[in-house]
Picture (cartoon, one colour):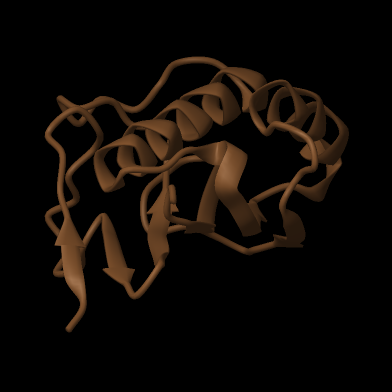
Length: 126
């Protein structure tokens, strides 16, 4: 039976989905956006927004009992592929080696007016 992961330390969307789900020895983290726990969009550009997204991922994974060190797959959504290099620099600062396999796609828009969203699949701590 899947188990919901919830923390008020990260953004809680009003949308009907879980921050993350644990199933077996794996945690599936929903796409995190650059929004703080109070619902405020992070000021700044792609670097500041990516840093907040990665912090939100870390917070949800910690609540689930794991960390980015156990991330095996990530998917990044950018509203402007020209931000790819700047996104990668900040992403690399937060994602430990060996880094998760990752896909990055440019999207026309995201559910809220932000530049980046990232979702992660990670193994639970043993």
